[in-house]
Image (cartoon, rainbow, N blue to C red; front, side, top):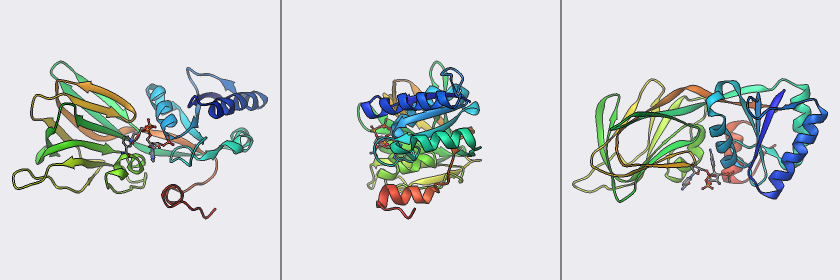
Length: 265
Ligand code: NAP
């Protein structure tokens, strides 16, 4: 087995990474950072986002395992004290491969078309003030948005920024995108739907810039500022991310443990 490890950089995560390398060597695993079969993320969900973007070009060939060194994560579900158990499972058993949907966008600027994939979400915000954008769904005008921003989430990202905006939590078996508003302006003149919207896999949405404006585009944890975005097409990606599950941990158990604070295991 070829593996790579990404850690958050704090002392506990670094020390676990060293322990992992030692245990992996005993089991005959090969460290291969360029072409791993499996990527071990040690830290939190943010660390797994970094690992995902580091290996995005070979996402079809890689599976991820998350170890958390803080609180329970949605992507990081092994505890720091379970390292030996994890390695034993990895060496002796075939994991169940769980595939989660991703979101993709095509960004049209005056000069080029850029393509991005997100594991959690894309966020658009006006840099200098209100974001003004027309939202089309399946090529039909849906609404004119004025406000702080728009978040387009994957199902597994629905528990992140989307949740803070009052969006629904979506099971990752539902291949969909969720569009949530950040502080839309609503009065007699300006009107948006106000609630978040879930699009199925065969639908798409276009966000068309309606004024000269600098837009901050966040792709998960990565922020980019553009001054010449014309439009952004959002859809469910054809590619997915794969997690190697060495033991069951159903999605709704994660939601209950992470947000309601108790577990039944
Ligand atoms: P961060 O600001 O350091 O951390 C954001 C928090 O979101 C961390 O507690 C992280 O968990 C958690 N998180 C990440 N993905 C999650 C998921 N799928 N479900 C539940 N919680 C999740 O930023 P970061 O660590 O680089 O993460 C970037 C993410 O932050 C973005 O993708 C966005 O979803 C989120 N964010 C949230 C808000 C908000 O809720 N108001 C605002 C901006 C960004 P860990 O501690 O385990 O890493």
